[in-house]
Image (cartoon, rainbow over all chains, first blue to last red):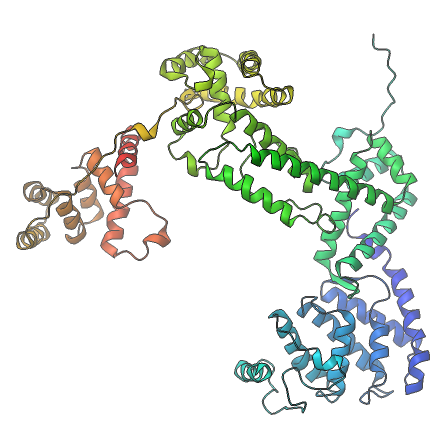
Length: 189
Length: 451
């Protein structure tokens, strides 16, 4: 009796998850956003694939409904790209659960994603994944604090920008070490 | 005639794996038809629910997902805890009945309590062991009892990693510890060390030090069991009629044992050992539990004696005590170096010689101190064969003095040395390793005494 018992109930869990996603429509309809049964099932499938690709398992309904409820009021999400954006957000979420070494809870990570997405990223999923979350993960791994202070107060600034204004000029290359080091120094001054 | 009625048992306890007791019990029960697929499905679901609950606690309720390897570890921990509860049932059949009648959550809670009890027991034994720790210079003995086992108690997490052992290569117990996991293994391991420590405690630290020095001069740095030579020697003393407390069978006693045991079969040796061990336990007034531990050690010792007798190396089993501190120290001087101008001429002359014999003749004629000889070996650009020929001119003491100055060291420690010095060391060690074993022993003996 090994770990194969996880797959034993995966069908049951996925069925529950689809109905939970559909229930979110009641909340999101006020923003003009709605998912069909097929789209909900696809989102649950994306979740399963992301979990498998990132070597994780999940119990209970998962985080899809939390992501939907957090992002449905974003000015950068429209009805035509709603489902597509959710697919990408789910994938990004699980990648950065691993990258942050589970040092951040689900709710905090979703809050950070939403604030950055609506703020400095201006609706860009590439910037959210390649810059803001990358830096968040790096800061967490190196034990640097302070990255959530502004977010918890509802401010919208970059993880390294103390002025509150978005500064894209030096930060476009997320892997650029020299610019990053300078940014970090500014952040801690 | 035995009139007691015994229930017929379906599952044989000896077929179950002590490390994975729960899984092996289920597989045996399923094989014998005591439980069916419906039971297995229910147990799987309950295990999954338990895992979900534990995962939530592991994540402190802030994360709904977990890495697969962490989940696997928690699952293994849960299985171990459930197994600990099931092992406590009188028979495996009763354990299966428990699985059928109780929920996994209930069994897990019982297992958790059992682990807590075992942990308390292990800590109590460890405290007793530390309080009466036998004073020995063997560093692995002290490091394992004071460091590694203490470390286990600090690292052990019965909630999420109850099956972990944490100690991988510590001091070995003499009697084999059963294949167990987690705190079950540690309790058995510390128990074995407790008995061995208790037995060594009957002898004075000086007697044991002398005995272990006779066993191996470097025993302080060796990873080996100190109870084995002590018990073997004590039994040897009983057989030869020597004073047990001194652990000194003497050379004559060792020869007597060789004559006595050389022709015996394994079963005969074991019989002799059993008789002597009973006498030893009476003589030392050992408590019954310790006497039982000694009895369990005898088959292993008998086996070693039989093997050694066949190889005619019984002297390695029955060690004769020595006191290294009493051996006289040797102060070795490398002598005075010759005049620089004269030395340059000698080196020049050696370099110009074509034949090895000529080079050796110059060395014999002009070199009068080991300090000069060392300089020549470093400066005269000798080949490996020539250097070996020069070493063959030296006696055992001189070779030991050279070895003291150029000891065997790991490669990393010698990487900074000059190339000629590395070459000299390499050839010196090669030369000594090719000498007959008795000459190597003499050199090693001198080496220990040179200060």
